[in-house]
Length: 580
Ligand code: SF4
Image 1: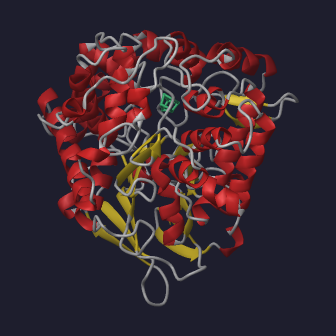
Image 2: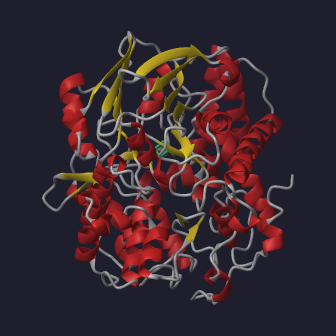
Image 3: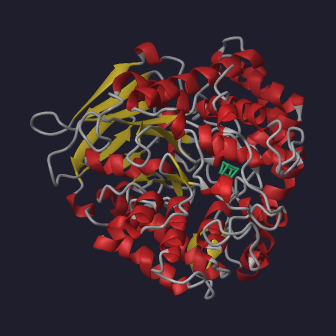
């Protein structure tokens, strides 16, 4: 990956693409690349949908190589949802293909003329920019079908649906999976709205004729990759739980722990949890059969294989196996206990191009406002359809939980920096509350997954109901996560590398053998700290202060059943997370 593709959408006479050397960005990948470019090139106070914002799409440092698990694609910009810096990453095929094509980043800048929509085709011969007028108003599935008919069944696609075109703050960027379906999403923070604002509907990547990226030290790389993959296979979470049941294995676990946010975070246990658990979901998928019913990878080179396929009652493909966060957002958080209905909502989100977490949280807030009743699945489908149709109500909902709560006068709105909280109540999992409050991203479980240590006993053990030890835990996880997000590795490797020193060492050796540069554990930590520092400085310059690093008041005042707890980490403690 020795070049950057820059596309100026504002150029006189139409968009212009140019390829340039890496320059100051040499050696960066994934979140390190996106956040460095955004921090350096985007004015922090600019309008997120304006000309000055940039959308940066970057494969990880190891993407496109034979390194196991290295296929995450980072998408970064100033977020229209939070107003701060954003990195959202996705699985799917695009990162591997972009890496093999030799691009360390695509930077979309400027803004197309009002109403113009373009597609970008990239292959070994170069870059072509063409009108995408024929794709206007289409969902991601129809868009990818048309692209497959034009470019063939092997290309990887990065697309937006109607939500991105309408520049909604909950809009995602979709990435096609191994079956060339748009089921993988850089979901959070409205990155799809920024792609829509630039006037890009699709990026099509064809790596035919390109080779896998080769490591600097092939022998050491091969040995480290083998040890790394073995470590993943032998850990109970990455080797057994995730492959057998997918991420939804967490429903029963979180419900049992009393940290499963139910009916818009009113309680911590859902009576319908068993009906929508990973165990029930896996049994249903296996019963309905069809190719791919067993768990499989979302991109080439995944050895954990936490994904799967969801077929409807008639055995027809409906969507990929909905993730834990999605099943919770559209399930327990809305009082819904019907897996078929949740899968339908997931399909709609993927097609319109929406973040499932933001939309589930938004529908729950709308239910609290009385727009539908908790548990009313058809009501939830109707609300989501309004978003895809772009009705006035849909435009409100499509801009997320914070806007919806404000419009309808709801006090219980579970957001930090205007981004909706995921599937862990911070009162019963206090470590994740620290991450929600302090990460640069707005409420985001992936930024420092303290659930691992609070609930799953991975990487040690910290009492989830108490504030003690949570600051240090979240800080260390946020630093480690930022570094992992730079490599292009799926975050689920964290379970094994936190518990098994030899697997962590294999990862460090893998990176060092690939780059040919010596690397130590301290070097990994330093990389994570640098990323976080850049992001935090951007947010400060955009106007964020310590007061933005807080949970909504009700988490401190309303006790959560069944443990009868409030969030007990003090503001003064939260302000020490970045003291290292
Ligand atoms: S573990 Fe799951 S999310 Fe991660 S790369 Fe594999 S299939 Fe994708």
